[in-house]
Length: 196
View 1 (cartoon, rainbow, N blue to C red):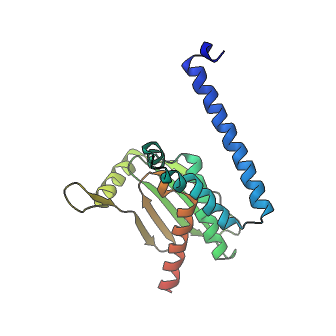
View 2 (tube, rainbow, N blue to C red):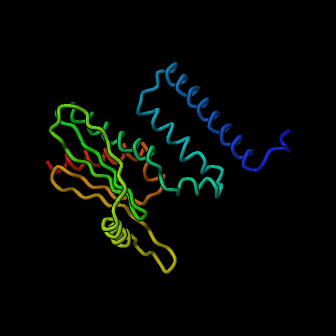
View 3 (cartoon, rainbow, N blue to C red):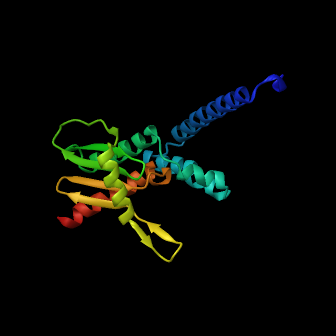
């Protein structure tokens, strides 16, 4: 029977099996987390570890490329929600944070703004226009630090402008995980405390 299937059919079946397996794995994980009463922040760290760090243990080029790929809108939304929730929790409802993610081919910008709203604000994911794309390309070029002729370190950038924080990072999944959102939120909170 399987020999009668086209390559496209086989790929479709493989994709469906993979999706169903991932959904089943998520349900099992959720049940285990619930039974063991694992706190939310530890759940996030475990899920990110399994999704992004554990595949590196096998040191497969394919797995590394998955982490270098651009994050999709859903993954960026997860990052945005996580950083927003961390910052909102820190201020304990006295104010809320507006989070907007601007995507480009060169960089991804996360804009976090303190808002006097009395309720949680939804996050927004946007595509950059051509002018902003050119600006991001220039920023990216200036964030590359040469070590020698063939090795460079690519850094991120965080700017503070009053009640607004701008985070710039390369558009690679590894930079935009929930764990990185927690780290970024912690650094923003640390900076706010040290300034006061």
